[in-house]
Amino acid sequence: MTSFHFYITLATTLLLATGCQVSEPENNQDDTNDQTDTQTDNKTSQHHPVDKNWRLVWSDEFDGHSIDPAKWSFEQNCWGGGNNEQQCYTDRTENAFVDEGALHIRARKEEFTGPADTEDSDNYDPSVTRTLPYTSARLRTLHKGDWTYGRFEIRARLPEGQGTWPAIWMLPTDWVYGGWAASGEIDIMEAVNLKTQSDAESAQAGDLESRVHGTLHYGQAWPNNVYSGAAYDLGEADNPADDFHHYALEWERGEIRWYVDGTHFATQNQQGWYSQYEQDGSLVTGSGDAPFNRDFHLILNLAVGGNWAGNVNDTGIDAGAFPQTLSIDYVRVYQCDVDAVSGRGCATRSSAAETVAGHPAP
Image 1 (cartoon, rainbow, N blue to C red):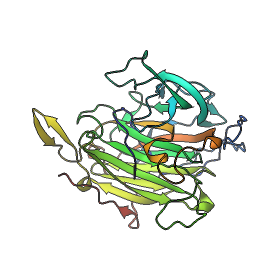
Image 2 (image 1 turned 45 degrees about the horizontal axis):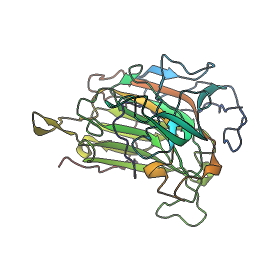
Image 3 (image 1 turned 180 degrees about the vertical axis):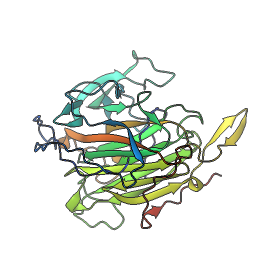
Image 4 (image 1 turned 30 degrees about the vertical axis):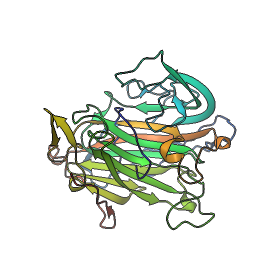
């Protein structure tokens, strides 16, 4: 994340890449202040990667009537994401459902009580509970979809309002280099507080937030972790809360690239990331492109408030903006059939993309 981002020890990986035009499914359920109103065309699955050697290996088009348990599992807790977020994650249909060809993750203002810690924690005890003022959902492909390298695509429409924090991202399946963030985190797309007053450096009064962010987290285990990333501004006329857009990531050995609507806007490479971890009492620096050389899995979630969304733009949470919905048309994962061992061979690069400096190992 580009700022205020402190996810702590969860295991979930996400890989995506640039998409193509498909129609815009929306949810037809009425909910006051909900941004998913309903004009739906038939989905056309037309997608043609620039390099035909990309091979589709996993996807969910959300064309059924329910969330596929063979592909997704729900996290269920009131932990707060390690970021002081204000939502409990549930597996209820009020918070996540499939309708008219899309997955909808809905954040609602309602008090809820659930486990105070994440299911992945050694301290997890469902009898120890916490109550928070919002509910939402967080889905992951852990042990159902896990990949090293590839092209990952999602077509999504994002929520708006102060306190909203949608994320499409990935975590390591096996934390071989140690706890967060020594084993890495890949954020394909995140956004906060869309359509509130922008706090971008050049923003004027009345300019609305319209940026999305792509970020890597790495280094040592928290609190000695670091991050680096870049923002992409779609502009008010094309605000990502108003319509569906394609968010994509290409991940190969030693290089990771981010895309919005086919535009390659940022690149990071292994000269700008590292992993350091304890081994036999000594601090070891991972070799090659560690930590981004192991299986990661996808995560889709909509958080409320927290250390990033609650501290920027208008700050806090606008309770009147909720419910809000993150709608996802599809998720597609490709792998490259050229030089599959190294992970290279199907890159889509633009010389105009920002090369993010990152943080070399100390």
